[in-house]
Image (tube, rainbow, N blue to C red; front, side):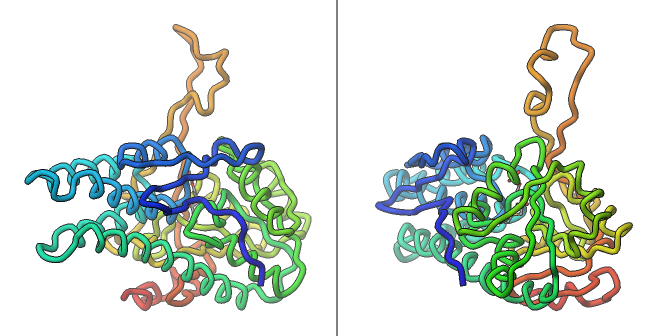
Length: 343
Ligand code: MRU
């Protein structure tokens, strides 16, 4: 089995170090955070990204808040609540963020014992549990994909986006460990997570990968080079509708046309059981200038940009949802398929 070398988040000496993903692949630089505001900014500014990694970072952000405020004044709970609010506002789509904050709120709500120690324990456990879930999902997914010859993935879902190993990229790692396979990665406009993170991460592990422009995906499928699209998720509704990086929906539509299968890989912390379907998932729209060439950024410019960074793939276009609790095949055709994943 391959082991991942890259670490997005390091909790050490009561501080959080975050690998600044905006500078990859050319520079590997860690920023060190000692307060929750810094962590919220690291999430908003995309230094750390990927649904599980965002949740874990936010949990450590709450620990940092407690380190600053716990028992120092009698309004420490208000101060920590303010920081939690700030962390919750850092990005809207990945449900892991809100799930992690809810877990930390439960720890803080207790009225006896050392709350700071309990919070550290909870955040570290979230981190380790995510890593372990990824290993389990890797094997579950690899069992399904056993005979595949080519896989296309989208965005980054590896060690950088999670507690370690990865969701979709974890499955790809596990498949590759069993037999050699052709791995293709979409560049993933506009932030280029595929080009700057995914293929770099794989290369760090000695796994070869081929980068394609997002717009080459249909032609790749037509060529017969791939039989699976394997992606992660930012939020899965209880019917299996899946929000993931913008472009995932197009891939699923293209896959249907070409007889290619679609696998979503995500821990159960990515499932939002409060949603019946994906219609009400909040889709983050980022600043137009992340997309728009600077020369159009002039007063009275007639050119604007619409920059949604996630989309929702309907469950009927998904062939398998892989979680650490098990796999649901054809989620739209199974009345209680998703419910079987509920704790
Ligand atoms: O905008 P990002 O880089 O945070 O988006 C990341 C993704 O969409 C991933 O595919 C998703 O979080 C699944 S990651 C394990």
